[in-house]
Length: 373
Ligand code: ZN
Ligand code: ZN
Image 1 (cartoon, protein in one colour):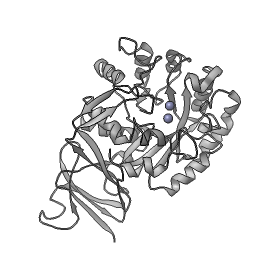
Image 2 (spheres, rainbow, N blue to C red; image 1 turned 90 degrees about the vertical axis):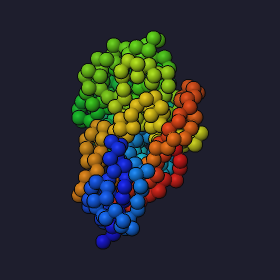
Image 3 (cartoon, helix red, strand yellow; image 1 turned 180 degrees about the vertical axis):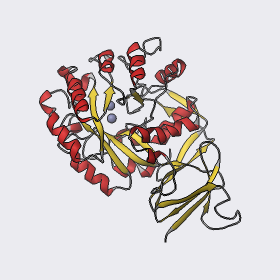
């Protein structure tokens, strides 16, 4: 029987715990020093300097490496940077979703996916510009074929993606969502379509990604106030997701949102090869550091990639550390180190505290992070 004992890990509420993992299952979670005698040399002693949470979940990534520019390798954007589970945000439509899911099964990172309502997915970056690429029956069949992996439908509703199709792709996505019971993740950006018309079509449980982008046609007006369509959508139960990306996160918008009391439900990267290697995204930890810098508490930042993301996925067990469940942990540290943070508009902020991923415990495997924040 293989046993892993992790001692003196810190939770985000500040308390210290020991965690024992036996054959890939959490065998015990106890106040630090109670699981083993304090002078025991069994297991690894983190001396309260390393934090632990349930495995981080990144709700918006691009994990189909064959597509360019929006593609990357699953474990590069997953466990190698402390992320135990990723949700591919519509890289593939019905034509290639089977290949994405098969590669997820070979990876150490757990993979979920939003199915692009366009059957061709991101093989082109104007995937909704021709309505014949949207085949609702084919999409519904793919979703029912992979119920454990597909968590919703993705529709990118901005000018360069929809072209002359206008709001029609979103209407088709809405109908598909209503018929299958699966929620939508909608990407927003430059218009047309008008953001107010987009928001009006979203229902409880749907997710708006790129919520703090810095372009025109956003969720905040020129004076930084939330538009009425946003307030109405939030009241209906629509969720906000960050989806930082190359072009979709602005410190100014995030600061305006903060002043207006609008906070995202989930923090995600929209990461792929280019913005991982060259910025401004780099990693989920880098995006989390940006929110610490914006004044969010560590507890809230980590909750937004653990318990909140897990509950949105309908898998609350992935957001908990519970005896009897398969081990699903992220180890990380919070370091007092200066770092220059950069948003999608090229604006910089100097942070004094950074989040650094250390490793992921997935079942009986301990995977050390290979990249820094
Ligand atoms: Zn997008
Ligand atoms: Zn994306």
